[in-house]
Length: 136
Image (cartoon, rainbow, N blue to C red; front, top):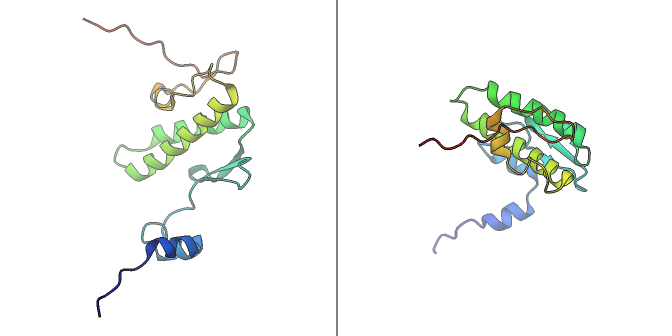
């Protein structure tokens, strides 16, 4: 009789996260992932082990600063940790962008992160470096 392949889709759709986590060599040794509460009113930031209200720009900016500082404090060879912090930094930027509309600088998370500027002007917008003129 031919061997049947395991039905992974069925397994993942029916298994609990706890079960999947215990069977995964990758997940069993890591912290819980960052995620939203079911109503999306809170976002759990795993690298900081804290939560933030998704509708509170002040809290989001505080955690954005912490994430940026954390990212830049990591060594270049800490790829996994840098990736996880980068994902959360991006998510918090996008939440801020949604809260503050199109007229803000948070829609460019990588620019904000590379600028190392997490300060805000009087309007509460992220301060970004002035783009340099191309040199000839």
